Amino acid sequence: MSQTQVIKVTKNTMQKMKSFYEKNCLNKNVPYSEFIAKVGNTTITAYTSGKVVFQGPAAEKTAAKWGTPTSTKGKTATKSKNAPTLPENFSQLSVLGSDEVGNGSYFGPVTVCAAYVDKTMVAKLKALGVRDSKELTDPQIVQLSSVIKELIPFKLLIVEPEKYNQIQPKYNAVHMKVALHNQAIHLLLNEIAPTKPKAILIDQFTPEANYKKYVRNEQNQVSEKLYFITKGEQYHVAVAAASIISRAAFLEELEKESTELGFNVPSGAGSTSDKVAAKVLKKGGMELLSKYVKLHFANTEKAKKLAEK
Image (cartoon, rainbow, N blue to C red; front, side):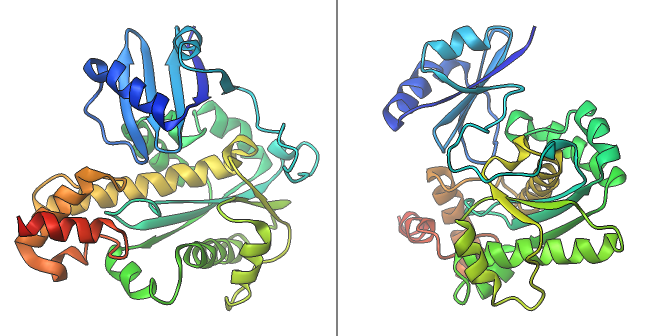
């Protein structure tokens, strides 16, 4: 029987795990991941956040070697003392959820999706396997996204690097995400009107007060029935659906960039990104690079030094 175990590890333990599983590593690019390894029937996905997800029959036993599980499949993150109080039976209500992808990746866009899941669709989406996108492989995400988009109303916003670089001097990363979440939610509410969700759940990326401070600058402010919670996909399938659509769009854009440039473009902001950016610089200078990356990242200066060698 397949299990899922999640542990949180220190940077030191992460490095030890990376070395330990070096021979078992899979050649896969998953956003925000340190490595993915397969040991027997158990898959180990380690994320830059320090979280490590173990999936497979021996997940519990394998995870126990490295730490104590923070959560298992089926559990929710309701234990946090600071978690906001959600309406009763929240997971079964008609909810609009939003999530974003790509903010921490040097290459590729920022994608934000708002998705509305009517209570009559909750069970169907769960049965299809709609859940935390970190538990899914890239092909599963792309495939599920196309299915979800046929079943529920959604609004997807994609900010390409070129546009991002124009906006970024005026909007810091958090302000930009607030503006995008608000706009996606506003557009979707207009689309589903006169239907109104029982709640709007935003996968939290900044304190609620901070979100509200930035949203005051937006023309079409959405302020009613808003809830903010981290790991929002554990509380309602609407956030999981939004996350999958966002991630699929991000992956598709990376693939498009790879095709245009003629070599593989990585996600994340590690040393691989520096090397690929240096290749882009050699090919077409800063003008070309600005079409594919978020220029304000520290990777730009590192890439310049590599390109000069």
